[in-house]
Length: 226
Image 1 (tube, helix red, strand yellow):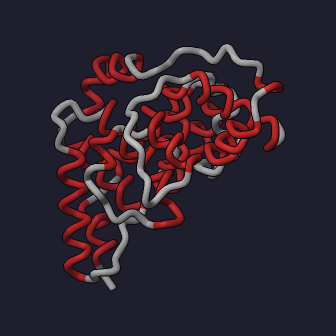
Image 2 (cartoon, rainbow, N blue to C red):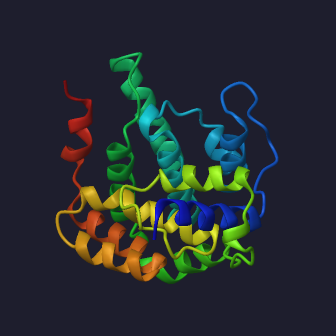
Image 3 (cartoon, one colour):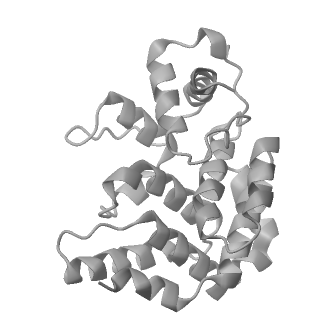
């Protein structure tokens, strides 16, 4: 799928999706970014005011939002990430929170709380996301949502990773799995194959399962060194 076709497809998907929160961020974000945030990122995630790495800002928000919504029944993950962010700032007041650290904390949290033993409950929470299939004609999508679609595509390292996504829940799962692949010591090819097939839930749970088995506190602590 060409980048233009994918942008139109993802833009159409988001146009059909429900707005999660009407709050408008007037001082930091343009109109396109506000549409992205209103439809994809819960306000309770934004309210944490995490100092995310600029080049990974929106991608990190997607990963955190998906993890906190689907894989965190105890609602402690965001608390942990906020504490980590503050500890980094104590070391360096200009420090930002890299996506690799976020992924590592999500994996450690999943292992500590036996999240993968609750896969059925996680799947139900995933299915409660806005998973309505888009009914728009992607070829006729308006230029504004095509621009939003390009923004969505930019959140994936694997550019075809969300090519079959027909709902924002599937898109979020694709970005989540895509972000975990660089941290996987094995099995990344299998996750990539699932993304290409459109098996977004299976890709996300497989990626989390792999990283939760191998992530260590030393991995987390390495971000505080130097």
